[in-house]
Length: 469
Image (cartoon, rainbow, N blue to C red; front, side, top):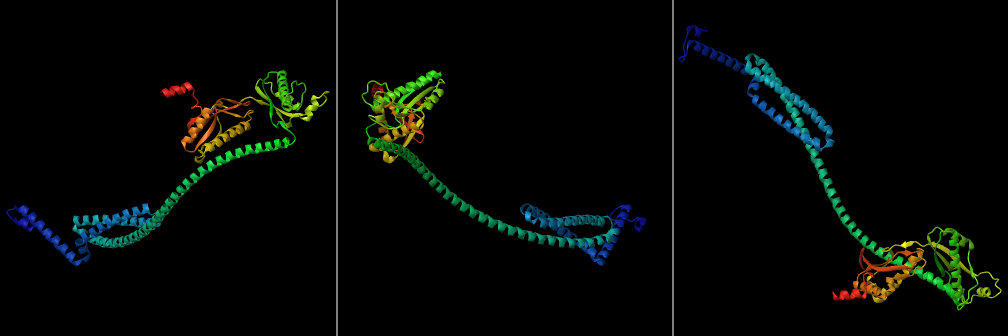
């Protein structure tokens, strides 16, 4: 005010500007003197003014540590489910720390605003600085606790990592052991497959031998019966021999009865000629049959289907059978004595063309001429046996239309092939119950047809054309 009243001028300024400059300088000196006096007297104010940057730095470091702790906490939450309790405690502490940090930041902003706004709030700033120091100490303690907890969590993570590494090593060892076992199992599976293949071949051969044995047993049994009868005389009619087969198709009972009677008469004629060779006139009826069975056959065979009426001998009879001679001598008063069986079979298709009837296996050591001949006869017996089992009256096979050349050529190709294969007997035309069994031979390897008797069955003209080509 004195400068303004005296209208002094400094630095070529106007008096008013000079008074303003002097007022500002005086106020600054007064404020600075007051501030310096307060700083000299109050140590808390000195800390608040001169160590604020350090405090802010520590707060920044604490915030950085807090952020890293949060990241580590998230990683621990995702990787370690078993540390849930520790994580919840850490979260609670982090929430408290966040609240403390927010309060600290708010108070710090208030302190800065108060320091810049007015000098009258220095006391408040001192109190806030004091409280800020206390809060900083608390934050440091919390930070240290979080650091300790982080160290514990890291130790736990390290321990878990070691356990996981040990488990991974154990799993790798178990995987190696499993791979070796799988390799051994695959080798054993291959060996088992080879043995199964050998077993299948041997079982097929065994089944074939069993079938041949059954045929031989039946033949031996028949030979035994025939031998017993031969001791008494010459067997004219053997047991089971078919005396007559009559094919009939009847639509009335009368026609069916006439067909049965015709079959019996023809069988009677055949039996008499066998028992008494040279007999000329046949007037006597010597067949003893079951009339109930005959009547049943009559009732069952007039449905317009084709039937084969079969009359076969029930026992063995020798030439000059005594009971027959008694019947033939007058006066005729004796009962028929040649017992026969009768049956009527539907004459239906039992094998279609191309359908396999029997199969044999040819091994490598059976490719000689003598062994192949034996196998050929075995195949014929097997065909006959299979046909007889399926109810074919005339089971004798007719191979390649009874032509020898295709059969010889076929077995020559089998011998020349030089490898194990299968020989199948295939029906060449429909095979009926009455028979006979027409077959062609086929060589098969792994399901593939190599050659057959039908392919080598050619006319001389066709062979001449082939030679010209």
